[in-house]
Amino acid sequence: MRMSRDRSWLLKRAEQEDRHFISVGGLVSRIAAGTSGGERTRLMRAAFLRLLQLARRDKRLTTEQFAEKADIDVAELILIDNTPNYSPTPRTIYKLSSLLKVPSKTLMALAGMVDLKDAQFEEAAVKFAASSEPMDKLTSDEQKTLQGYIKFLSEREK
Image (cartoon, rainbow, N blue to C red; front, top):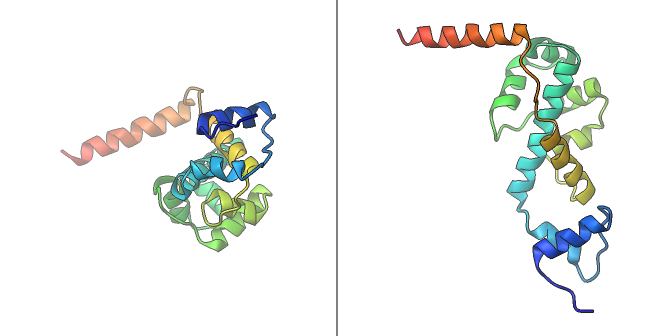
């Protein structure tokens, strides 16, 4: 049997294997080679951000309350949420991992601070980030907060 070296063919075969990679002659590394380190970091970071956002919403906490519960600086939490290349401090990751009950090494990988080189981990992170996008309407409190902030911003230019 002659095997194709086409990336899409390899990914299709990996999916057919129920998401288990069987490496013969380095096929896994060829698949992984299609995603650069920077892309992997961005994908992991998307999952990290969604995890923090959903955990905060699940606990029904404001960003400030979430930061207080985690014992981290609210400014750093805002930076994590809003600055694409921001790297949280190891202390912040440790505190967040304690609050979320997630191993700190795993959270560091999601934050893009360490590379686990684990295809299953990466795939799960991408699926989580993609499937956890909010689809629900804003609550009345969120609408009021948004409208109030937009009003404040628009009045600043006057």
